[in-house]
Image 1 (cartoon, rainbow, N blue to C red):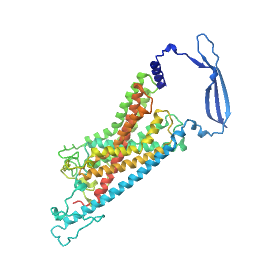
Image 2 (image 1 turned 45 degrees about the vertical axis):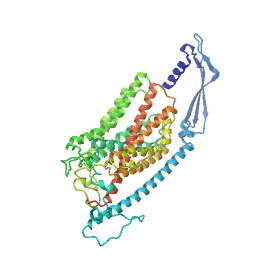
Image 3 (image 1 turned 180 degrees about the vertical axis):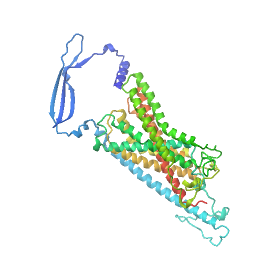
Image 4 (image 1 turned 90 degrees about the vertical axis):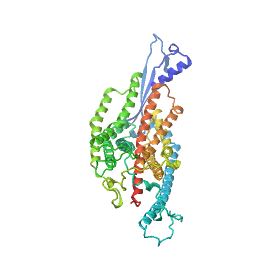
Length: 531
């Protein structure tokens, strides 16, 4: 209604019409039609008779009449809401084709990544294994001068200047002593990953709850049911946020604390970094950030929007008692679950590092030992595809390309007052997004490691999170060309909620990207010979 009032006011201002030129009319006859099937009411329609439209004039008596009509229908009770669902729009052939195209892109991208990486990694393993064997045979060799070849029949070149005649070690193996060093701002990064995993679980839980609508009732039939499912999914998934942030911090804290068991006295993954202080204060900082990071940002944006609603007097204003109830749920349920999850993660037994017992006290959770002194990251001679700032935007673009059609339908349901009910499509797109983010992030991390840049954690997170930037830009396009919104009220609400959507999607995709990159990095360094 606020939107219609603003449009009417704008139309009057543009046409120069004043309030005195408007005439009031009223319908005096209406018909209430009630359709029923046995003992169930299926639908109720209220219609006005056009012939009963009369102008309201001072002193003129008006006679109102209401007719009630009962009629039998064969429509089933469970299908009573179908009249409000735009099946022609949401189940259009374009929607099906977009899902099929995204699936084919995923298959092609997965096959391409597997082909490139497996082929390239096999060559790397062959080259590194040859250098390792020649180093072991140094001093006693000379009797075997036959050339060795890779899978393509190309000779593995030996450099007489290297130890034992082997080629100088280069590529991603060079950073085996630094690749498992803790990322910069470890407490913040652990909190971001914990929040991201919470959003992954929350999103999956809400979608599955909506897909299971036939079992408990379709979510669009009850007002606010999706919001309630999101609220409780967030509360109960808080333990996931605490556990993942706590376990991640525990795994990497040993590589930053000089006074920890087997500590090495460096932090942040770069030469000359300041050692991170030991003690419980860093644990407390990690737990505090996990608890307040996302709620603080979301509450700040929603508070501004709520204040704007209060000033304009709209029905979008959230009453104080509702805010108080949500705050109490957060304080007495979400916060304790997050703290409990963090304590579980802190005391969890982490998996061993890798094959052969490599590592030591610090490296017991990693395939390779972390060096005491960080190696410098080369800056000269690095190709453009070895620099994270060049690769991250491409990774986000591919991920966005797999979801932008579904994003159009979601934005249309949000801002054009349509009931979104095709949650099966949404579940499929969610799975496609996860696969695409994983594949693109692995490619980005491999190219960076091959350029001897071992700061892969933030790069992996940024590769997935960059999808949010394209989503927000698409939101700007949608606002300009697909909506008729104008005015401060509508603009602030639109971009406020788009900022929340992009923020949460960025955390979610960044966490998924880091997970895939972490598995990839562990896998390749577990299977390479390291002295």
